[in-house]
Length: 347
Image (cartoon, rainbow, N blue to C red; front, side):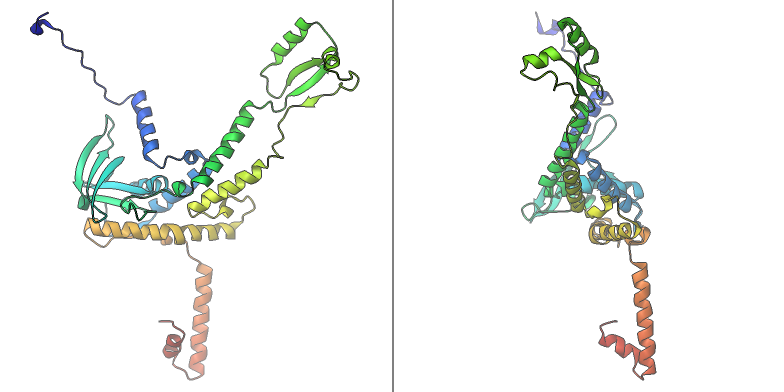
């Protein structure tokens, strides 16, 4: 056949807006992230939601680009991937994947992938056009971040294995099923009875007659009792292991394990809140402020303590009351209050 009469190969296109593309995108996001199966557990998602909520409610001054939606995306990305990359232009456009070119261990250029409904696009940007926040960086790769779960992989995998084991046990184990002895009957009748009750969790699972017990070498008179097939989870100490592993994973995110304790009261939750915000998210907010101030060309401030009221109001009131009382007593004794405050290191 002549070339000009050869039929062209059919052209196939895909818009990406279908079920298969959505599944592939979800899996790509999963592999590009922390890669830890513990991300699926409720404890991890609770901690991630705390990061997301606190950062989305932060008071931001100096720029309009860091809106609440962007801060929420930033909080979730930092918790699950350890870093956030967004292009500056008409707002902060989050990137799903990126490659970094460095010089002196500092990024100088990025090749980023921007998500779109009909398929993402790739762009190359200089470092000054990209907002890059990262936590848990290593000296070998200071331009990349590390998610909390990857820094505690053993605890995260233990939590996942325990929850998976409990799920499989309650799904497959014959919970509530029993072995009941019945009077002897024909083999066909016994098999029909077994088939009728098979797979009914919580009901009789196996029927055993006296003849079968005798054939097995057991006394038929002593075998006339029911046997429970429910697994003994108490001996496996599943509750203790679950609580311990869940607390360890929560503390990786800066959330004290008392947050998941059913016996915790209001004061405990307030201390947990202050610990999370002051020791974990407040330093993170300062990292975001420094990066935004450098890339956006102005002084940017991200305050997470004031909106969440993560400070000891009662302690500050007591301290102020003590200061006022000490100054009054110093003035009555003829001592300059300002000089006395400088002597104790209070400016």
